[in-house]
Image 1: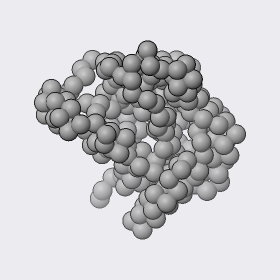
Image 2 (image 1 turned 180 degrees about the vertical axis):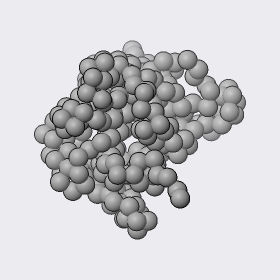
Image 3 (image 1 turned 180 degrees about the horizontal axis):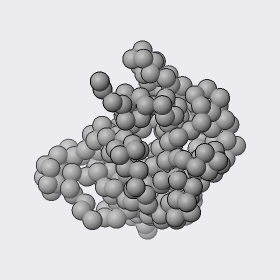
Image 4 (image 1 turned 90 degrees about the vertical axis):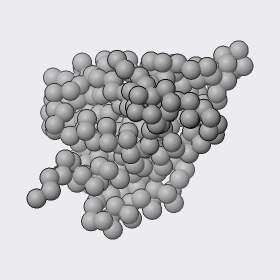
Length: 252
């Protein structure tokens, strides 16, 4: 008999209407989790994913919220708890946009929007789900970071800085909530083929693939697989970790 790694669990995936978030929500559902698909603008895509999961026999719901807004996040979490049950897993994946350019061309407002937006989304989502997790003395939080937080690239200074802050947040929170049986980890994708990276030149993608020991760039399902692995009880003694998913391009 097939054993589903997330059977009986309730997962909230932010930014789940496309890319890595979509693949993660789909894989969590396939492994038995009831999944809340958060979206901000892509309602049609979110509803389509929910319908796909339910057609396959799973449980899912779409929930709209700008995760940079504390009130919207609290309402979202309340709706998920009423619709699916207490949240066992938060996957903080929502993408905060940023310009790719040298620091000398940034305005402070552009830089601040990425830095603050990234940390706001994690701050508000964690604050909303943690009381229930602490009460149950069980829970799991996974932040989607980037290998650029450890290995920067020209033009990505806002992204690298914001994700470095996210990584530090995770380590501190893991220390804080570990005594309550709650695990907090980072999954850090390398270059992954999504609509967010479609603008990159094909020669750049080919160069990255050539440098990687596994000789390709990532797919959303590669990152989703790492999230499911870390979220499952097989990883129950892993917390505060930074796990790169880069085909070996970043080795720690």
